[in-house]
Length: 182
Image (cartoon, rainbow, N blue to C red; front, side, top):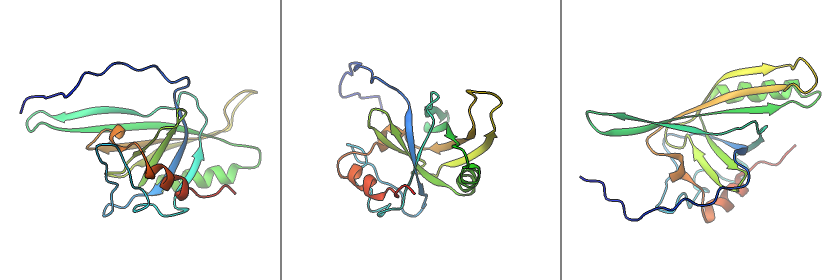
């Protein structure tokens, strides 16, 4: 089947600040996967009830999610490997909290919600689960050094994350699903 694009696309203005400001972490369930529509994800409550997603603010040191297309030339299958490295700043006395956070993230598959500075929220790992790996703890060596944890989250999905942007009621569902800060 030939490519049939339905319209031309003009490049829009850039947002003032790029990057991810926070991530939401919810449990991955392979039997109850998020469904996307032509307008993005419009329902999230079916998958994540109230107070089921932990929101983790991350240090923005050019925190971005990069997806790389992979294709099987013989059968024309396409998929996307994604990766994001996030940094959790450690306030004084929070060593155990950061250690426990990093341990929990590396033990289970999750669905990760990327909250961008421009207000966009996308789900990654919603199809096959996101895996956190390569935890690194940095104690900092001098004034101004980063102190805290960093972790890399990897995905391997059939679709681009942009298809899993939260729209309409899904944004309200997301806000309802967030756990309160302690």
